Image 1 (tube, rainbow, N blue to C red):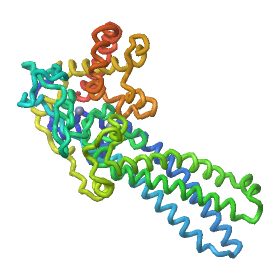
Image 2 (image 1 turned 45 degrees about the vertical axis):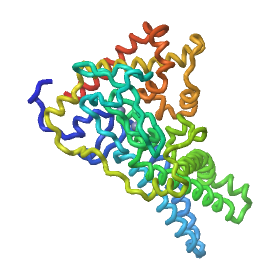
Image 3 (image 1 turned 60 degrees about the horizontal axis):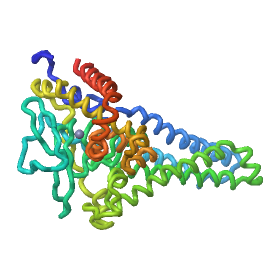
Image 4 (image 1 turned 60 degrees about the vertical axis):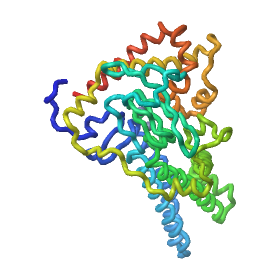
Length: 410
Ligand SMILES: [Zn+2]
Ligand SMILES: [Zn+2]
């Protein structure tokens, strides 16, 4: 990795996160963006089936010289809803969700440094080892809020930001990493995400009701129609199942918006039990999500990056050490799950729930947060029971992270 070997490169070409870029860095996706195809298929497939059904009915009506007037609006609404749904899906997944720019070196020790802080830990630096507190208290609307140091991004995360380990970025107002959308949901795409799930719910209800009407409107009995109209049968069952999922999600996020919480905060802090510093009242909370200006991206992915900056983003021994620390603590959490009974130590309840609820993307994979949240749980195990078991895996983890960085930089 000598200086001068690099051609002038754009930011997206030397990006340290796990994102995928399209059209020369104009569109940014999560690493699991391929799931977009599945999500789009699950929307377009049944919607297309419904439209075909309506077209068949229109043709049939025409042949029998009956009125086709009500069927055209039904068809048009179905097409518009489908397009809107796909449009919001695309907007959610192809934009910068609010990634916080990484630091190239840790911040200087400042006055907030408290020697006796219980959360004090070594934060490793390249050259002289700096001692930085793991967490810092900041004031938000008169409430004291803890912000954590991110070892990967080398910064104190702004309040409400969190590190998504799938995308490997700190994201502002991190809600969760959505595997269906293949992108983090953060400050810049939450609005579109909500519109996406709402439109999906409306589309489901529309197809469900429309298909029932198709079954019921026939001249024969309903039972006869059910046994002959397989397409409508399928659409009714499909939309019935899907509406529980997307409808439930829409209601849940409606509640979150009205109380100004993120999914992450809801699962982690349970604001219902203590005061939420971000809650401004239901109207203002909605205004904030739907009518406030979306902050512009903090990155120009197409901008050319200096060679010096590229050097700084290359993997170093420091990064390797960092990776090993992260992996080790990641494993400690896993060990805790497995050996919790043996050691008598268990994960905080909320972490366990996250896994059960399938939101491990949001939290379970968030190595930095695990680290921060479970210090008191992790440390004893790390030092005592799982040292030997974990060290092997740590090396493998560190190696693979190093290796992938090497591949990227080549
Ligand atoms: Zn981070
Ligand atoms: Zn993510």
